[in-house]
Image (spheres, rainbow, N blue to C red):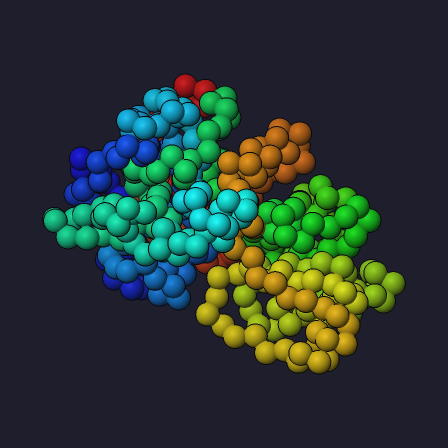
Amino acid sequence: MKITAAVVQKQGDPFTVENDIELHEVGPTDLQIHMVASGICHSDEAIRKGDASVGYPAILGHEGSGIIEKVGSEVKKFHIGDHVILSFYADGICDNCLKGVPTQCRNYADYNLSGVRADGDDQFKQQGHHVSNMFNQSSFTTTTVVDQRNAVKVDPSLDLRKLGPLGCGYVTGSGTVFNTLKPRPGDTIAIFGTGAVGLAAMMAGKISGCTKVIAVDVVPDRLNLAKQLGATDVINSNEQDPVTEIQKLTNGYGVDWTVDTTGIPAVIKNSVLALAQGGTCAAIAVTPKLLEISTWNDLCVDDRKVVGVNMGDSIPQVDISRLIEFYKLGWFAFDKTEKFYDFKDINQANADSISGQTIKPVLIIDPNYQVGA
């Protein structure tokens, strides 16, 4: 079938919304999804401009939400009409998946970033030629086909327009705290960068019982929002040295945990130096930039650690459902970071994300969608 999608024809090109994209048929374990909305993530921009690549031309997007309109012959737990959030694909049968860590699936890169379906077929074609996909999903489309393992079923009474970013940005930030760092009540945490991922990590720190939840950024409006969402303290690093201020807030010790979401080497260095003895920094930004630290002075002497985390070490079908419950309780108000844009305005939405004007742009792909319908 032919669908409409936002295409990046070559590295660095803007998105162009085109209506002649050929979509793969539904396989035995697949779901055909009528797309309602999709968040825009910094990973989409990294691929668009070439910091990472799935090959070009490409259809990006990996924070999609929609409604199932067709199911494959072997699908048992999903049905036509189900509302779903889409996330990454893992095969579920490799040793790491069986250990409960699908973000470390042995074939994660091939499944999600090779530009083809998990079975090796083209997800999309244009005039008979290959078009790369992303995350076995590509949510910047009016319709897509995904494997059932990409999907998380959600309550149809919830607003699908808000939920898509739970599939990547929000589950990455919160999962880094809940699944990887695992702070205990009474611990302290500082988040460097208060975009969608950072604010999700910050809210997870609050939910975990951290007594100091410190947000660091250079944008006053974002710091004000961080306070609304649970930060105990905020630091504008354009005006204050964050390491010094964090030490002042923690009796001179530093914090137990830090999360860097910026990918800026100087900021990552500060997120390490702000740690107390035995502390851990999670560096989770998508960036090609290099970090220079002294193994002896910055790490070994104070027994500090730096870890990388992919997708919050999450199991989407477990972690996204947990976030929705926190949202219902009023503990995880992720929707306060979102702004809606028409699908045709994807380049403006992406520009507003890059500039920081909008924390989490959400593309409304189906303007006729009604909550609960």
